[in-house]
Amino acid sequence: MRSALEKDVVWEEPVSPRFEMARILLENRDRTVFFENVEGCDIPVAGNLSPTRERICAQMGTTKEDLIPFVLRAVENPLEPVIVEEAPCQERTLKDLNELPVLTHFEKDAGPYIASGIVIAEDPEYGRNASFHRMLVRDGSHLGIRVVERHLHQFFTRAEGRGEPLEVAACIGLHPAVLFAAAYSLPLGGDEMALAGAILKKPVEMVRCKTVDVEVPAAAEIVIEGRLLPGVREDEGPFVDITGTYDIVRKQPVLEVTRITARRDPIYHALLPSGAEHRIYMGLPQEPRIYAAVGKVAKVKNACLTEGGCNWLHGAVSIHKEKEGDGLAAAKAALEGHPSMKHVIVVDEDIDIFDPAQLEFALATRFQADRDTIVVKGVKGSSLDPSAAEGAVTTKVGIDATKRLDRLDSYEAARIP
Image (cartoon, rainbow, N blue to C red; front, side, top):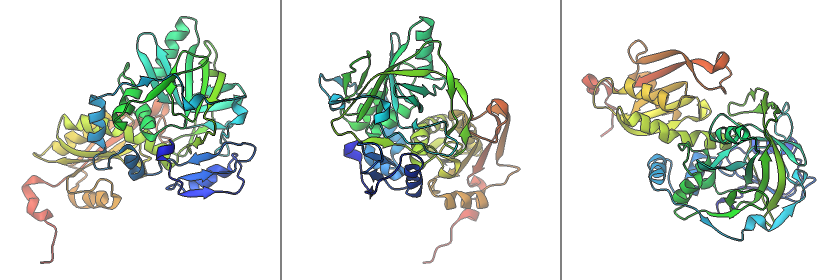
């Protein structure tokens, strides 16, 4: 993390982790803030580590225009991590969770939440998994953890079936490439640390934890070792998710902490829920999936999840249109490529999909609703959409805002000689 940390704003005055730091991060949403003096804690905090698309792309060694092919090349060429015996993340041992400057973000939050933690676990059959999970601090040695029904959930279900706890390690303070890889949707059995190595163009150094049989990035700032307890579920939430609205309260597993290790002078990474960084780490890793899905039916140029759609619910795709029908086919494929997406607009390659004004221009001048729309009713969308019906059932819309090939002359932009 330290190699990617840019201190755009250095906050020297004492600041409280209860609401005050979250407010400052929100007010500086496009800048990295470094809090030097946290009330009740000797650990400084860095927030908004990757506050913009441009920043995270630069941190990973690419550009926003080349992000998708860059990531897809890394996916195809994983670089296995290497094991080391000693690591910075084990220079110091903390007494308990109360030593960490965990933020309470919003008024109705259930309590202080770790939002930047990457949870690493290993399964006897499927190997390692690394993924983002929000964690509610219950007391000095217990965390409530939201385990979405994905790979970690499968690992835990298998361990529970054996009557065993699942050993895990929650890592805080990682390089953006490692965070991006942990958010990427690899197939079951894929190793996110190998993807991170490919992005970084060098293997990620890993070290074995002290109390659990899990390997973690050696350069992490803080590592929380522990076990997900079988047969134990407690209320988790409310918590503000990507749309800026409260997610529901659910019965979720409990992580029992066995040890906390850290660098000698650790920096805590604070990720503001629903902030720009949250949306970037959720949304950007989904864009290659959209690109790949559209590429099966049209000549795709680029794809993104838009800021106005919370980098999750709305998307834009540019294609090189070769025949009529390509636009709607691309829209349908995009909606299938990212099932949480509700609305997508397909445009020609001359439109900058990162510019909302250009997308609106394409909509205004190249789209007719009765001809260029697909509507898919009664399908499962995102549970994070507050407008969706019970069970996240929604209506999805695909828009073809590309030029008609038989009328290209009518779209010619005026020029001054």
